[in-house]
Length: 378
Ligand code: MN
Image (tube, protein in one colour):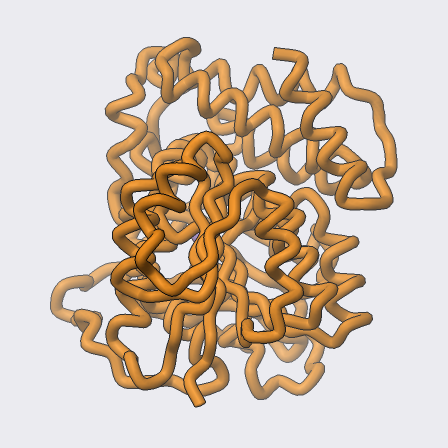
C-alpha cells in the first residue's frame, strides 16, 4: 500500500521540494491532495502530473481557471481555505505535509490533527502562534507531529531511542544569515536584494528575510518549546555559519548529540515522510575535506533584536507570539516591497507587541482574530 499524502502548499519552495522527494519513491507515495494559495499555473501542471484526487486553490479568484484546466482530469477541484480545512476529514489521507507559508497553515493543520491524520510540519507559524492548542489536541488524539524544519528534524532525530531520558538543553544552530557581523549602522543601508542572498540555504523569500533578521531562529525557538515540551530557558541558540550541524541536544549526563548533513531541505522532508525508516537517497554526501573547520559564536541579539523579541513574546505567552508573528509577516512583506528599511522590521514588531494588550486566545478562530487585528494596524 502506498502512503497517500496531502501536500498543503505544493507550489512554494518546500512544496516543490517535497514533490521532488516523492518522485524518488514512486512505489511508496501517492499524492492524494494538492493545495496552493494562488500559483494556479504551477498547481495545474502538478495536478496533471501527479493525478491527485483533490485539488484546492485557496485564492477563489483562480477557481474557474483551475477547474477548467483540470476538467478532463479525474479530480475534484475546490476553492478557499475552508474547503482545505474540510478536506482534512477525507479518510483517504495517510499523512498531511504542511508546507503552507504563514498563518494560513493554522486551520488546515488543526483540522488534520482533529481528524487523526499524522502531520509532517514545515509550517512553523502553526506552533509559534497556537502551539499549546495544537500540541494539546495532538496528545488527545494521539497524532504524531513530525517536524520538517531542519533544526527540529535534527532534535527529533537526536531524541530517538532516548525513551524519556531528561533533556538538559536544546541547542538550535543558526547560520547567522547574510548580515552576520554587520553593525546596526550598516544594517540601516542593506537592500532587499542583499537580504535575499542566503549563504547556505535555498528557501522562499519570506523565510530568507526571516533568516537575515534572525526572526527565523526566534520562531524556531518557540516552535521547539511546543514540539519538544521544553522550557524556554532550556533552549539556546548558537550561530554556526557552516550550517552542517543542524541542531543539538544535551542530556543530564552532559552528553551532547547532534545531527549533521549538507544543508538541503529535501533531507528533513524525506525523513518526515518515511519516519521511522531511513531510505537510501542520492543527495550529495558531506565531505570532511570540504569543511576543515566548524565555527560557533553567540548570536548578536542587540544588532538583531528579532531573536530577543521572540524570546520575550514566548515568555509572556497568550496572544504575544501571535502578535509577533503577524507583525513580522506584515513588516517582511513591506520590506520585500521596498516600502521600509531592513532595520524597521524589528521596530514594527516591537511597536505591535507593546501596543496590543495581552489576551489569552482559546481557539484557532480567536488566534486568527488576533492576527487580523495586528494586520489591520498597518
Ligand atoms: Mn529552520
